[in-house]
Image 1 (cartoon, rainbow, N blue to C red):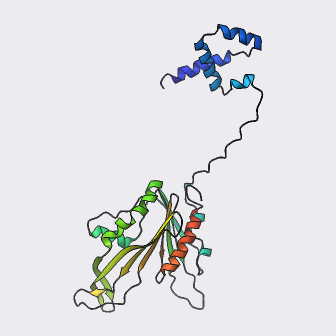
Image 2 (image 1 turned 90 degrees about the vertical axis):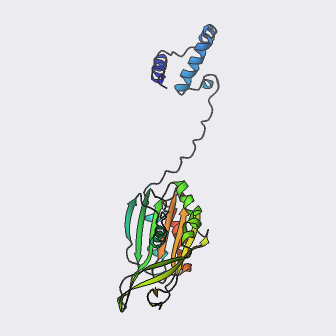
Length: 282
């Protein structure tokens, strides 16, 4: 490769000296040329973008141009996220933020469970991301504290990492299939030390996009470590939907009281929206 500039300069000088000859003179000079000179001339014609066949052959129709490849998407636009119209209830303006090089956190409690056992969290790393929170809108006649309807993170990953994330899900949750968490809890009588049994599992797959899964953490009611007495009712399961479309992965979490059926419905809607951000395009 170090000799290429000199070779190209020589070809450019040869091209400046080219004079197109008549047919008789071409045939006469062709007999006197050496085979090496013919090869060099062929290279010159090729680099100049001229077809040697076109000199003698009649003009043919040009070859149709191939369609241009779809441009590669980089930033995740808001069009790639769930829209308020995708939700069954009215919501306020979404709260959105961008991220760069963020881990694809499926659930903080799942990560804490793995760390408590001396393991890594096991999250894949993203290239960039966009997150949003959709908050329920309450009517003036029944004002209450606003609560989140759904939280969504959309990540762009290296394609191999996006597919590997789903291949690793069962191994990711396996150490937390039966995990006893112990920590403080606030009660009407103050702070108490309680224990809760968590059971993480992958309960559903392949219902949306190129790949999808539902992760569920079924919890027992918190129990007072000192007395063995329950400190409240059994909480609703923690549900997380994970959806992949191309090189994008969406993580969706419902607010308190959300059901698995609602989460599946929103995950399907999210997969359709992700087509606006994914590579390759849908």
